[in-house]
Amino acid sequence: MDVQQIDITASHPLALPVGVTLDRYIMHRQTAFPYATGELSQLLRDIALAGKIIHREVNRAGLIDLTGGMGVQNVQGESQQKLDMIANIRFKRALTNGGEACAIISEEEEDIIYTGNNHGKYVVAMDPLDGSSNIDVNVSIGTIFSIYRRVTPIGSEPTLADFLQGGRRQVAAGYILYGSSTIMVYTTGHSVNGFTYDASLGEYILSHPDIHSPCTGQIYSCNDGNVDGYEDGVKEYLTDCRKKQYTARYIGSLVADFHRNLLKGGIYLYPPTKKSPDGKLRLLYEAFPLAFLAEKAGCLATSGNQAILDIKPSSLHQRTPLYIGAPVMVESLVDMLT
Ligand code: FDP
Image 1: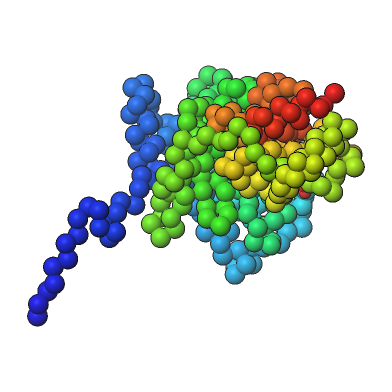
Image 2: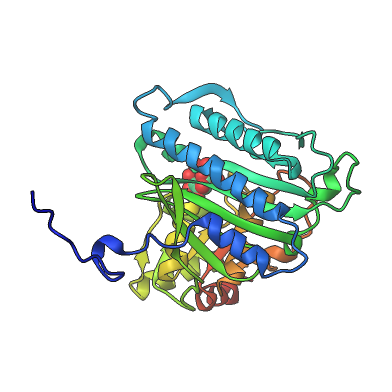
């Protein structure tokens, strides 16, 4: 039988490279810093691994009875969904087994979670699965994480002080969005990069290198049902957006709304409301990580009277108003606040 020879050169479609994997990227970045020990790299890999497991669970949730509530409330007084609990367990396990995190705080638990790795140099604040109200209806949800180098001595038991350092002390922050595809976006304080998960390979592939957000945009994102309770400046800003015929887009999953606006240019607003006079979103594991990442991508994040990253945290589950997105839009909103 004649075997036909196919000439597969490097430019042939069959020979195209799959791209840079997250592991390779992390390793490459690590070698750029001569004193890097690899512990932060390992921590990021642990988070990415837990993200793969959540991706799997989210994708089959409707098939294996993972939708719906647990019938209990979390520390925030919100009803806990099965996937919330599963994500919490997965992340705790990945970070505990990975060995680099000495403690974790999570939206799902009131107190500090001690991993037992007292020799670990890092602490992690996280919302394992954000956007719970979207879980049962196949709408995008996400994980948000924030990493600090501990301030207590290595070998000792971590304390509250390790978590209340302030947003500018984060060494890395990011999110994993489980959407039409799963993407992990993070920064270690330099560039912001996005890695799309290829489930057939089991690898995240660099798909959004060096993200720079547009300096302005035409999308505004807030819960319109709450507008009556917003302060006058916010109402005025929204009226202005409507006059300019901007586009209203609100998924109700912070990660998804943030990600869209980061790429397309826009502003996300969660002002104080009658129900949540201090704002709804949590400072340590929602606002801080997204603000850190936003600033590195050229955006701004404010509570209305100060930069989110300048807020001095005082408790683990503290809330804050949040206005985050394209700098021109955030600045013009702030100008209208009294
Ligand atoms: P959820 O309560 O569904 O977990 O983090 C809280 C959050 O979602 C954000 O993801 C989302 O942007 C916001 O709350 C939605 O709140 P509203 O339903 O009040 O708009």
